[in-house]
Image (tube, rainbow, N blue to C red; front, side):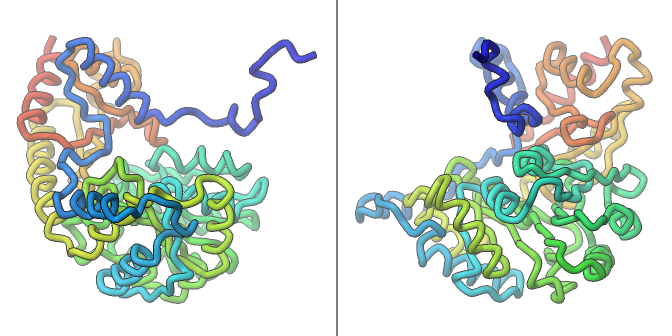
Length: 399
């Protein structure tokens, strides 16, 4: 008889951890509910409301009775809008059977991993990385292979690093540009150099995470690895969504485009997990993608202004070093100098706890992203909040 309930849990669940970004955000919200004036710079979520024309499309869908199951892979209208988006914005041609709509870009990645990874396959992930990549690989019984990048090289994986990490077990290479958490983007030349390495290793899938495409302000226009290395078309899966671009995080719509065989396998996995994404959200996403990017431009302008403020602020704060971002709504300052000045704070995790308790500012420690000695700050909040947060941090450290 099994007396220990924990021993009945699957080993795969015991080798992963809950999302640290969601955990910090939840803790900040708890403190706010208790009346604490917490400024939450932990959450990666636009502070803008979903545009009215998108809401109206959802209301119309409800009124017209589009409240039933849809095809597992999404409505024909939304899939066509995604095909048109790829053609117009990215110069990539896909057919409807090369598109899968899922419950967010995270779900798209999960489907990809479940559909393509076997036990002990390897997934190459440059660090700093989005927190979910390694754990989703583990859930698929694969092994994450972390390539550490550094501040001096702008957190970019070099072709030599990539080539050295590839083995006969490598199955997927993840590219996220611009990146969460660093905000740094690869140039077309850098993507081409990485693509040239991947081309030498048939059988490896490239997973291109383009979720921050519309928040890019450097290295324009946005470049996907397929734009500079089209030879990878038959083994590249492009993942995107409407959450970040259109302030639709709660609507839960992401999508993937790729080779027919891989998309079909991902669809099969989705058919036995969630089935279709919410029908109402799909009609809203179709409206978002079909109406152009005027709203995304306005959001990007605000993000850039907030970014510039933070970069200038860090220049005046002893112990901080921060690279300017190329996009997203994150900065990723190095705090090693701060830790050296305050030996009672031993690492980035303790520093994040210090800021939450002493400055009432919530940030994510860099260790969560595979980069100890850094913190991630989201500026998807008002300029007033950012000014107050910087003031509080200075005061707390001064004390």
